[in-house]
Image (cartoon, rainbow, N blue to C red; front, side, top):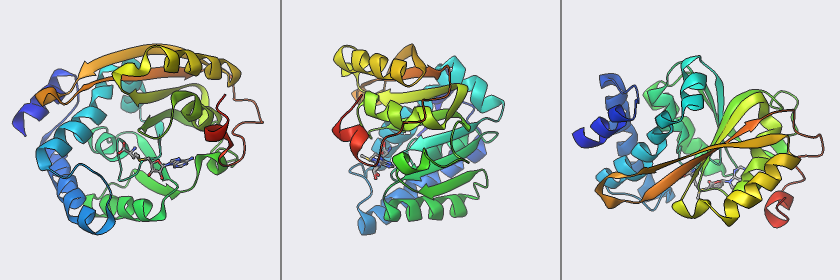
Length: 240
Ligand SMILES: C[S@@+](CC[C@H](N)C(=O)[O-])C[C@H]1O[C@@H](n2cnc3c(N)ncnc32)[C@H](O)[C@@H]1O
């Protein structure tokens, strides 16, 4: 996957030999476990490298991410599923501390298996819904960054992210090119309610014509109001 690694480096991703080996091993585990657990629709190795690993790594182009990751900040991956983008990010930015959260027990068990296999001691997998985690005192206002991909619309994601972000922290939402427009407007409205403000929208293309993507950034300005997140299911049913 030489060309994928070269593209990562061109974006400023710190990918060394150890990281490259760990990504290869993670791809193997995804393929192996997918047969049993039905973790992801993407099972071909090159597709895993482009649609999962390169996509995750694209966040290197966002300056506020690099600042947080390089200074060893606390990062939460909301709805990590089989570990995307959290596992690739933890492989590539070993200074930061990661919490990978998902509501599905079998996916969290897979992520625990991956972290043990790869020796990722700076990663913790948590089985929870964000609506519950966001009400826990030890999680509240405690993260420097929240990342999320393919979990919910941005206004819903911000209700999950804002309560766990410290003031000054950032949410980075991985989205498709259709983000700009109605979804961005809805997200800006939700951000205001939650004490956050929209930041940059970084656009990029995956290799092999595998698609155009954006990462939408939001900065938490003040702690999220205590009434958020609302109870489990409400953010998705009645988005802000
Ligand atoms: C389509 S998968 C995406 C997984 C991964 N982020 C990716 O990009 O491949 C969405 C995941 O979000 C999780 N999820 C959805 N709503 C959630 C919530 N409120 N709290 C925690 N996890 C949630 C689901 O259990 C599922 O594993």
